[in-house]
Length: 353
Ligand SMILES: NC(=O)C1=CN([C@@H]2O[C@H](COP(=O)(O)OP(=O)(O)OC[C@H]3O[C@@H](n4cnc5c(N)ncnc54)[C@H](OP(=O)(O)O)[C@@H]3O)[C@@H](O)[C@H]2O)C=CC1
Ligand SMILES: N[C@@H](CCO)C(=O)O
Image (cartoon, rainbow, N blue to C red; front, side, top):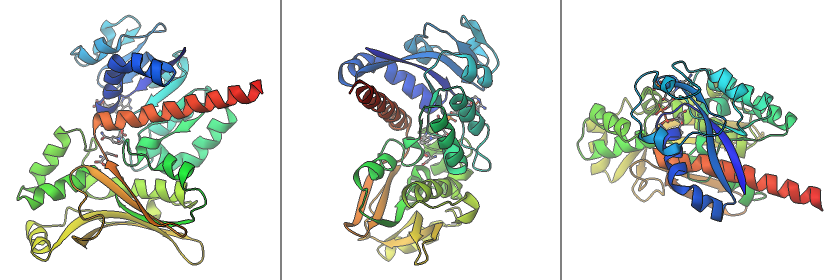
């Protein structure tokens, strides 16, 4: 039986949900996936950090109501978030990065990923910053050190898109995509259609665990911009940076705009898209669009996301599913670990052959 020792960097909604899953599903994973997960360290800005080489009890971590600096009560614990020490010194095979997404320079998450990969530890992350801003560097670092950098949850939460396209649409000649890539803004627009006020809808999205630490990123399109960069670079082979992508959010939409659209049989959606131009370059954009109800993206509601992939050989292929949520996003981390596990198995078989 394989046991992966993991260190959690950030212990908010997503990593806490992963710990919850570990507490209840390790026996199932052992049976169906061939591994179990053992949490050997956690570091969090509010709670502090702890390294426990034999492993921490996931149920205790989830259920204890730790106060600020509360990890100092645990054996091997400290009231400070010693991220660098934890990443470099904890006996972890995999670093799980789920601190806040910094849309400007991706820090400190870029450094967290760098320290892990340089130390020969795999990284799985839902953090969009390092992927949109430093993917090339981090992938090269992973390759050099014989480990993986995986980030399925950085776009569309646990709904498969990055790995799905890579594995199952190879050769279909993708030439663009358009999608609803932010759960919070889509949830807010839906609530506004029922008459709820913008701020109340944002507050509800925060309570449900969909929104970023600063929800401005959601409603002003900064979050979608990172996702457009990630998809364009991953799926279209582009080399975009966030500044290359034109951006407009939904905060300028009024109740009257929403109402007028409704009466005209249409709906406002925040759309992220990219297209390959005739000269091979790729252009990305983020903007609210008023879609007729018969448009495939118009019916996508709540925190659900969808992306229509435009291919030469298949026409349009649309993938839809949860775009935010704690457990849904923790699942993305699990899917990354499954990918690492399967690759390790394949390499072992290759060596044995
Ligand atoms: N929630 C979702 O639906 C999805 C989230 N994501 C991404 O996943 C990541 C985690 O999301 P989520 O769990 O919801 O966010 P939360 O804000 O709930 O959790 C982030 C945690 O990380 C801590 N943290 C922030 N900075 C640091 C730091 N420098 N060192 C250690 N800990 C730190 C925060 O502490 P404090 O609160 O004290 O700041 C908080 O406990 C984000 O990057 C987000 O964009 C991706 C897809 C979906
Ligand atoms: N805040 C983001 C989380 C998923 O990246 C959203 O609402 O879509």
